[in-house]
Length: 385
Image 1: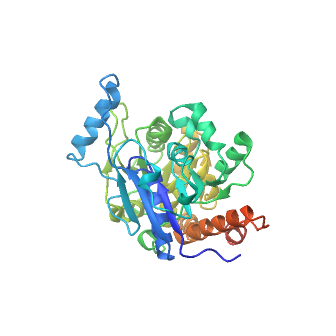
Image 2 (image 1 turned 60 degrees about the vertical axis):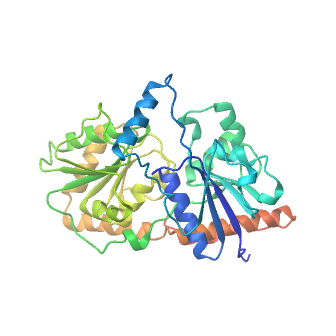
Image 3 (image 1 turned 90 degrees about the horizontal axis):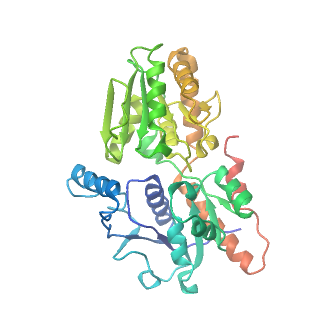
């Protein structure tokens, strides 16, 4: 099956942010541009103020504005794809160019495009996790997932969710990639003093307190252990990080390689994670990763080879695995470091763009009554088990 060329593709988003979903959308769009397609990223540029009846959300909004100097940083500030900011509370069909496909990124945007005319292209939805965990109208969320069209799942567990809960048996696995040129690191050894890294998030889904508690517990066996972290928001008042703690608030993307390479082990303590891009980026930087069994990381962590998987919320086990990685002999650490890098090298944005191209072609041929092979088959042949 020859992939289509010279497509027009619309990605439809809500308000832009520093979230992994926005970052992945931008990098996938730019990979498609490199492959000769016309790509638009449409997003809402008006961020409504929370009402006084929502004091906590209002305070978070004010804090974010204060920390950013009034400028809300996000991943759509520049791109080789065409950026289309839209005023209002939703993206309408009139805002969108005619296209071969329009892709919703969050459940709300897939809901928007359902009524759009055929001239806006195939209807697709990139499912980045269990949207019900993030709040919102559960009935509407479930209805959106059952809408016809192309379903694109960022991880194997999301595919299983779509099949087992929504009865969708033909979703396409569309994993995130890694900016190889930015993050690839030469073979390296463990540093001194020992350092653990993580991406901090305020949401309980990100499991920051679990990571902090595990690090403190590990420090009883590795007293010199220090922590480096980055995040899009300052630390919540109830979160007390272990000392010494170095935190980078909203770092530029060019700073990420330095942060990853200073870490000797990376923690991903989430309770649920669609893909877990920081874990894969850390692996690309030759950093062994310890993640919870929260979803996406199970696709790219090979237990005991490139890192470890622990149960969600299991502080003692996470601490012990952290000690194991930081105190094993140099050859063992380097073996894990190199294994993670080898796995991460298979995840490229050009590969993801190719998968999307083939999924679009497969859907076209299916609509014409043709039988086509799975667009993932060729990609998976070279992926590690």
